[in-house]
Image 1 (cartoon, rainbow, N blue to C red):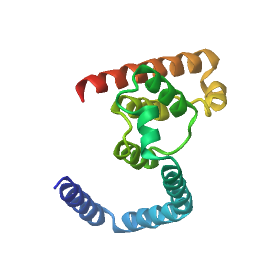
Image 2: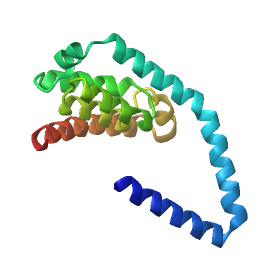
Image 3: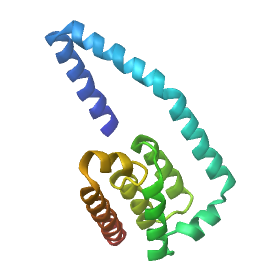
Image 4: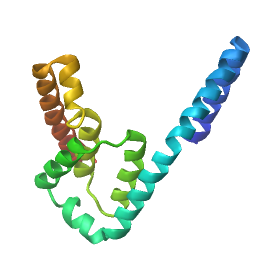
Length: 158
């Protein structure tokens, strides 16, 4: 049902945009198609890599390493992995779903996902260059800390 509502909103927005400025709307669609074509091979590669990893790692091992009963150590390890991983969020969500289906715990998955999106270890040099060392280190430390707190809260809620 949610999908149908979102498709409806997208269609209505598209029609409003077409009515307002047809040329601009069609140009935007062409740009979006170009962007999607350029990203498609990366997306397919990442999804294949995720499939390969999930095929090679048995669900029992996933459950043993980051399952619901693994506790704080799994949360911290997952947070550290998320900190040094650089994959787009739109690829991370299906990965999280697959890991959950294979026995991974909510707290560990939340720690992984929040650090993946909030902490930028690999992008730190660029961030230091742009914002300065102190700001970057404080932001990343706070983001890591809050990611752990968020994952613990999610573990209690869910």
